[in-house]
Length: 421
Image (cartoon, rainbow, N blue to C red; front, side, top):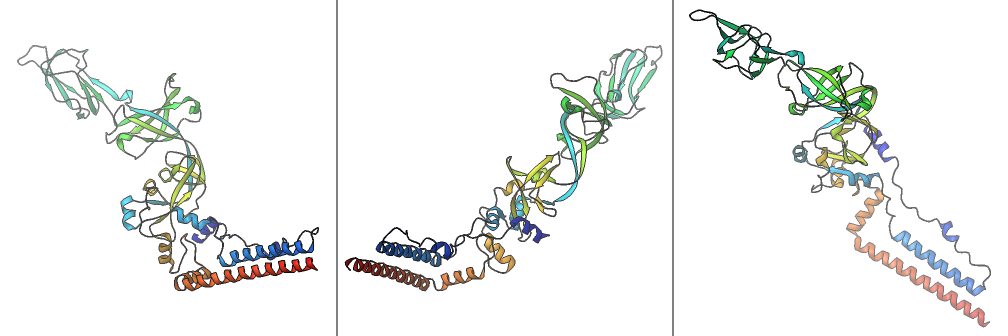
């Protein structure tokens, strides 16, 4: 799999600038036919001089520089870290795979109480509150005695009537104090059952038609962290918001821990369709300019190395982004720490060449490509016999130039003799 991915990324081996063939060089040695013999000889001499000089440049200047290939790009796009660097950046990766991909609609909204889950405590008789056993913020159970009311009936002491909670829930408002008079039409305590809540989404009208009754949604409440709450659409609101251009979609969610409170902000990812076998990565893996998105892929040869890979994106939802081009199944992309990798690696003490040499046990070029036998020989000559090679090359050039000058001089002399005769 790794070799296949490497082959796909390289696409071809390095191409080098080709040397001109002898036929191409000799094609320029034919002199104009309309000139005399002397000029033709001089023309031929100059062409020979040109060919010899080009030959010197081609055969003494070494191999032509390589075009910018995949290995040189790999060198520029590889971030090398050590074990401490990986820990400091808290690098985490996931393996790329094909998955079921959900198309979603984004909406914002709020958490609200369910209207039918709120009740009040009141007295059926007139009297005076002589005991109050519950206060705002207390959780009570159905049947608990919350207030004792002393009636106005005669007696010493007058008879009292206990007022019990008519449901379990949270005391959210209190309107009674000890010693206050109590009337049958007065509300004493407000009790709210918040074991379940409504999450009300403001769905844009232009996409509301795509949201069917019973549609699933992932609801993120920022105050509670990143864990989503799964719920289904129960009903729509009774009126649209003209100014915002939205309609209300109501989702009922559990609040068994009591952490949800009315008014909390909620973010909705409402699922409208699903596709299977879609290559997608977590949203946190995508970095770079909006016009040139990239991901960082763990190098499959070098430890603690990550390669910057351009990608083409497709659809996205609240969790994943579709990858159309750039990755292969089995690649390990960086999720946590991917943003920091864009600024890391500049001060590393190890180069790509050194890392590959240590990993593979043989030499590589600075751009990461494997060193050929001719390159090894040339490097050895430069380090072991660099001075002798330079002197030898200079003598060759000097000999060629002197030979060319002799040829030109002899040709010119012959031309003059022909003219005299």
